[in-house]
Length: 248
Length: 96
Image 1 (cartoon, rainbow over the protein chains, first blue to last red):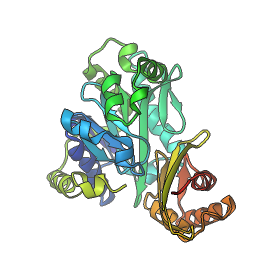
Image 2: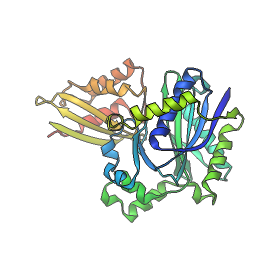
Image 3: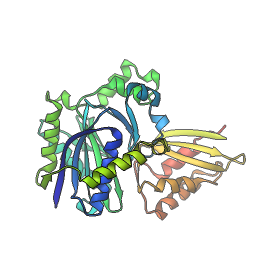
Image 4: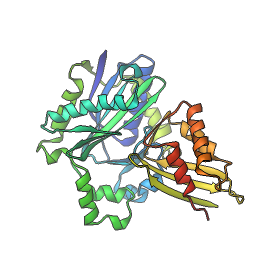
């Protein structure tokens, strides 16, 4: 199977999620190859899982004030603060039959590519079910998968740096908990690439790229014109809409 | 009447249930929120509908049965949550 690899791109939250969906459509109709995509979020954004309540999870007013986008993902899982300077995100979009049938097993396969990438920076990471990757018991990557009409989409983030103060102010943790104690406890549960490797964020991207493509036939290619226009339409009609983002 | 409750599933995810309840204590509307996974995602709407009409005074088993039937009918798969866990949270809701 030949893969399309899309090099590290920078988009706003709405475009990022719309691109994933547009690629799912084109992989499904056979007009695009299975795709591995890397991206960052600008402006920084908070994404919530598709079953979460926006107002329960996110301090929407503060996000507005800070210019942080808020968006509901198509995938389940938890709320994530996507700091432009703090992470690299990937998406894998391919026919379901390219992966093991079991959901947990398919998580393991794709998370294995992340782990392979991190190992190139000397980081000894491992899969931590249900959907995390950890180093020394601390989470370094969160991942979420959906399956629709024969297509698997898994996206996930790899933490490069941590801005816990902003993270805790935009995610709805009660004010009392945003204390030094809480931040200390988060530091005990979450880690980042910079704690292990003093490298620029591009080095993380390159390591992940190498880890993902190892053993695969691939070509580096961007979005088709059709995917681009479909993503623009989806961003406008779905992902920017309050109807979608505040539906729960 | 309305109420909500949340609970972390042991070894799983967080489940948060919001209920609107009729004066006779039958559930008018249920919203099940959380960081779990359900495939396909639209099965959540059927699960929420399956609970509507059941009295909050029914035992946990009645809710488990309704949710499990909805999951089976939709051929859905739950990850990080179970019908039992959702039923447990529903039963812990105090409505006012």
